[in-house]
Image 1 (tube, rainbow, N blue to C red):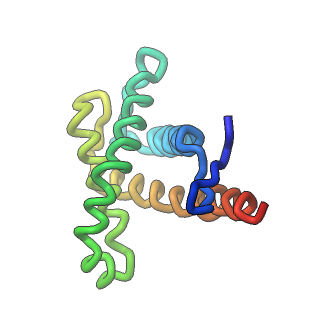
Image 2 (cartoon, rainbow, N blue to C red):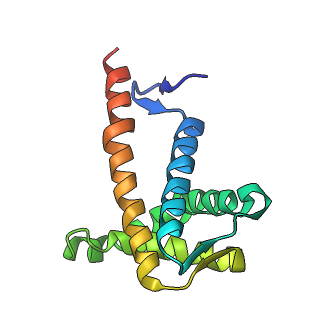
Length: 142
């Protein structure tokens, strides 16, 4: 399995499966960490954590499909707030996941959901800046 592929336009791209797996593990760690410290956030871990995995899969799918549309539609608000509105988009994705999974993924407190959204935004920035971009830069120069 190749980690990075070089397209016809000579741009390096990271393997989508590897990127998805990386985010899957990190989202799971965020959920486990937050659910350990706060009682108002609940992910059903029965069936060997199946619903936690489903929640992460749904969030990944929503991040690839709905999130780009939301980011595009909210560019003016995000610009006026100097980027502080961006975690609200993650908050919407989390609440949508809560609605889809029902009682298996429960965000009772909006502030806990906002904390999770901020942690996901920080995690996305760190993964992009510290892992993905350096790998792509390394392969771009080779």
